[in-house]
Image 1: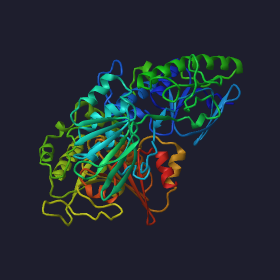
Image 2: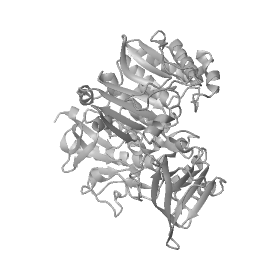
Image 3: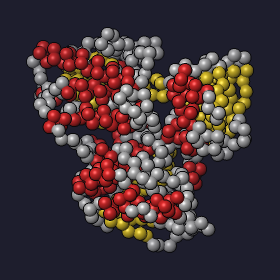
Image 4: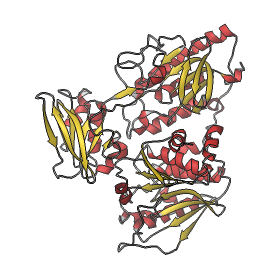
Length: 587
């Protein structure tokens, strides 16, 4: 076995526990690979606000974990986007079977975390994404002015019910127990909020839908065993947000290591499992508190033990992996590349409707005023690395939103050092009395204005954004520029080959919200495929400006992915990485 083919430790899972373990192992000069099938960062990336991580006053889940990843990377940790599909844990050298081949290591850390628990009430699966949701940050705005039910009695239910009052006219929390099961201070914020009604010893049994969304809910009173039919006071539609805990992602190790009755990994003193050389950290293991701070602590503890284990195995076998001898941290060179833009959010903040006059005020700002100094510095890095210039082709109408888009693009062009230019389509189009362009919602990719398309060497690239790509979508838009201009974000040869293998025309419409933390990953994944293959078109639509599309597909959750190929249409909800998107389209 070549030392180039061997790792000291393979970490399965790229959340806080896995990233911390990678940081500790790499800093100690061990060769470590962090394997993640979805988005590096884990479940915390969908959390809009983190205020209880020691030493960090206020941040988002994505910002926090991106810092963790950068630290691990700077110390020399390696990363691979792939799914672990099996383990061979016998012997001194263990094997992780992945979707991209087999990997060898002395030790393995399982840090696959947990996923939101589905309750199984009637209608839950049928209306997921169409009224039933699991992320308040991503989907709360769909229920602006409507009533919502929150199911759960823990930390998430208490905290997210308060967040939902930003949008909902009223929030009713359904708690199975006699009281919340979380910290009393957290629960008090929900209990004392005038827009929140908390009901105890009740559970949701089912929901039914009618025109436009959910219409009725069946609620069981556990104390009396009586059921009732619940409807919002205005007789309209409502939403259901489920925050009922998590299910450990332990299918990979079922039958390999000891699990408890609930499916969590049983660990011992220093987080070793029942199999020598296999450790577990984070939310998938049996413990009494699942928070980011406990996950990072787990990662550090397990990493230190794995250092000792890898050292013993190396001495025993005579095999030594190709360990790092220097790192970016020691050389004091920060690896700043396009990925550092992942949560850059420039002004102006997204407007809610194309008729919002505030858009005009944003649009007439001077170019430098739209972006902070830090954002301009990051943009300079991207523009400096772009191999080819990109033309941003604008399709506008007579609304303030179009004025805002033009100002936004003009500001980018002015900062690009000649790497960007813009054009405006002055062609004929139908518009209504407000000057808003009329479009056909039945089209495969509706020609909704305003829109910005990316063109390279006079040829459309298949990447477009309908609306203004600010908010969380600024990241995916800038990285889209980088990908079409080249060289683009690094991608494994197998994924590139799969993307280029798509032969027949494929159209991907992604309905997004600028407040959604999961949407950018899906937009980026779809548009990365389009940047590699001219047969693929991937266009994103801000549903706050094009509610007709939300109604067309019954979307009450984002991202909503509409795939059209060969006359067949598929509608899917939820965040997708590049491998997941390829799986979805069968490539």
